[in-house]
Image (cartoon, rainbow, N blue to C red; front, top):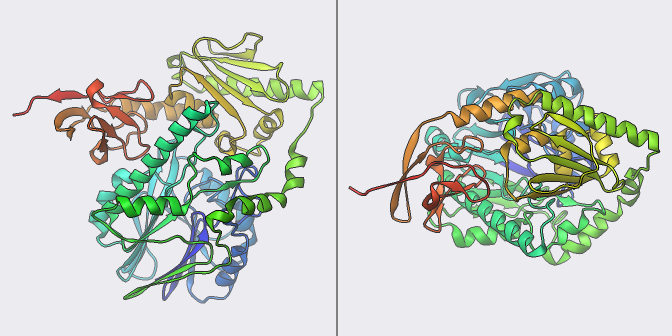
Length: 522
């Protein structure tokens, strides 16, 4: 088995009879409305992939893990039309990914359900797809096995609580790849003072590193490949994110340094790969490095600034001024969009705080979403008390309303500023903001099903035993796979929510609880 790193979450895996291409993201226009760009730049890998497909007699498969644009590169996939290969994609509740791929191609699509084994060339060569279909996270991971060699590419799929089961079923896994960097708008978009921003960022980063370490110890691979991030941000409005001393976008050397100190029970090779590097997995492991895309840490700032200079005109063209009539039309459409969302949101009454939306470029305009009264409209009142606030640009919102971006894609552009008072996370608010109106009802059903689970487990933390709810109230992560910190916290392995067992199991960032009850020792 030979694995070539394509950049970000992309890999090309080749065996005697098969080539599998995983999540190739090579677009010269990045992802999420030109917000994210590949680091290091991997635009040269498009030719490598195309040549491989055209010039092989082997069976070729192309796996897309989910519809996020740093995994689903529609522009590149269109260029592959007419070439000989088959798609492998996960089967989700919603058919959005299947519909998107079908709209691009006439190639055969193998739709793969969760934990389903798909044989490729005999029983000894197969793939398995593992899905996380929890509305706020619709994603998948892939395991490829060929004659006993196995590569488990978890990318950024939140299934860490399933790793032990996967390991039991699959046995030895030689190569393992998973995300180690951030990919959400918290805290990068939040209007925090610098000290708090640094504290929140550092805590989230180290918690993510710890979850990677635990995943490695559970998989026990020969090789770990940091993947699925970080991107770089070349938009002048975002570029300073790259140079912050503390944020949730660490690069490979930092996580490798952490793992070298942290790992005790498993000591795999920790590979700092760049696009074009390859790993030969025979009796011995042979890593072939290339210097073509390698960026030393001391060169990072200049590299990013030079990279960004190629897109100056692109970002200047994005800025749009609207006439009064055009702006009024955008506001009417936005009010209508959120009204439709509210009508499809049966749990709206559970959100006590209103949501305000303001435009940076037109500060006199403010829209208020009142969940309690089921009303959306313009307002002149200033936010006070408990509230959630989004400040954004009118032309970015118009791109969402025009169907060029989903709401989740828009959130991942990071082109907004958020405030919440008090600073407490709410799952329902997150769902309302990120999901399309078609998803709202099912999302609420999912939340209720999690809340209605009654199974309990016993955990031991800090020398004390506690009875707790088995499933995390966030998205149902199995707390049997949680870890403990500071002698009092139980940490969910999926999204690293901290539950204070000495305070009844309350989450330390919101009011969610796992209802912890201390048990007397026998």
